[in-house]
Length: 314
Image 1: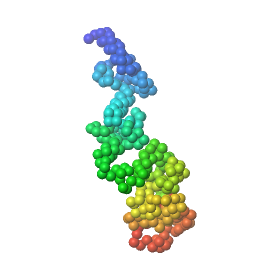
Image 2 (image 1 turned 90 degrees about the horizontal axis):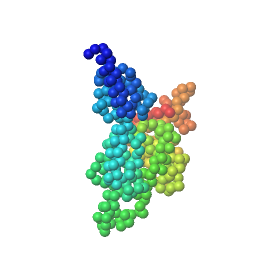
Image 3 (image 1 turned 180 degrees about the vertical axis):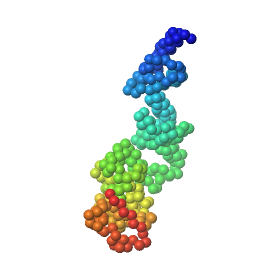
Image 4 (image 1 turned 90 degrees about the vertical axis):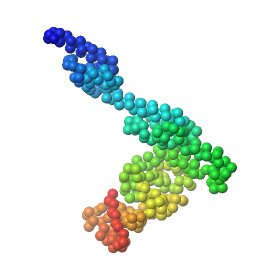
């Protein structure tokens, strides 16, 4: 092929390439055509601030040549698949498209059943593939089937007026979740008793008892961040394990935190914990809730010969 013919061919292919990129909602930046496998620079009209590269062969065969448009389309497809499956099984999906950026189809999503709109549930799309999947609808069905056997509801001799379902409704409500998140954020995601700040280990505790102070349920000043070890009733040495789960108040909590931080509370692993601030200027003194101890004297003061000692410095 002569030089003039080669130049004419490249100009023709460059013109076709520009038309291809325009068809794909992009603008070709290069003015030279090499071959079909040569990566050419372009700007996507939807993402004009980013220069990307693609070959003419990719432009012809791929639906999206822009990496960002391709990813947005994947997210949209995931959203459509999940929302359709939830809708088919009688759920209303609460998560938005932007929530799908870091979620796959098999993740859990926030939704509510159309028969129980006041209760937010976390469901996997796969769980809804073959059945409705709402446990409250299942309980309603079982209640109808077992009617007359005194198994559910007011017909049960142990019925207490629906307290459990009411508590569950509150604890799964949007207002409660928002209150919990604000408490954790205010306390900088740190247990206010032992200083634990591990993710997924923190809980929001009601200072004044939840059941007897309904007007304070969503009061931010009535919340405090505690970790699982300091809060869970099943954990030996925790607040609820020592003080119980009824008639809790600020005095109980203050005394528990003081005792815990000063080594008076022992957990299931036989560990006494001291929490406070270290003072290097006075022979390594540890300050706990206003009380000052010499770290070496702690062993003698509390006679921890059979136990273990854990010191947490805030």
